[in-house]
Length: 196
Ligand code: TYD
Image 1 (tube, rainbow, N blue to C red):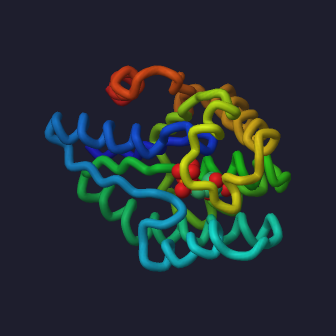
Image 2 (cartoon, rainbow, N blue to C red; image 1 turned 30 degrees about the horizontal axis):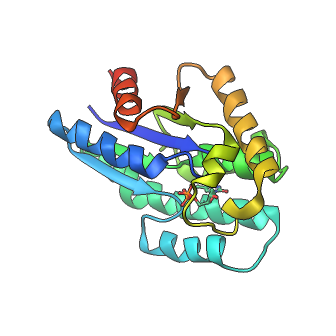
Image 3 (cartoon, rainbow, N blue to C red; image 1 turned 45 degrees about the vertical axis):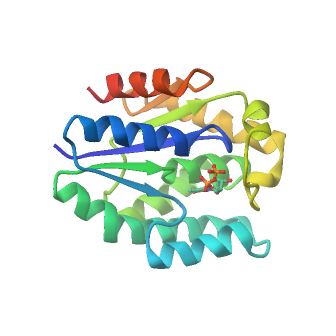
């Protein structure tokens, strides 16, 4: 059975490490696993990633729409087809990042950003969203690559975290906060349990 799992969290929460470990755990159970990351994951998406993370400053809506654009491409080109083949897709970020960063921290409004993304994605949305939960300050301190958005500072990250908390409280069946201050294998074990 196909599964689209998104891993979310503030900058430095440890998403990429958890994605890799989770992919190994699922592959060990015989699942075909595809790991993708946002922004990026397609030719067009990687070009948009450059603009978003290493380019000039832009307006909040320009930023939100570029995130949605790379995501539409990834959904159509990679995620949708993989799900149709019955694979497991693990995504390092998803449109929930846009709800938190652009909708919340940039102030565009969660519902406005949700509407744009749902239009762009044609129904290819995560079945389960795991938010790696860590204190934003601790997470920021262990961030290794600081990009245009990840460099916005602690208050910005607190606003991002607040949206994740709100969205999880409103959709407990789909969005789950997982304490990521523990060792990776414990975090992965809890996510495997959630998948089951
Ligand atoms: P990412 O490559 O996941 O960085 P990190 O591994 O450091 O978390 O994401 C890059 C940045 O882009 C990160 O600061 C979060 C931001 N972002 C948004 O603002 N909106 C989005 O929709 C996505 C996918 C990412």
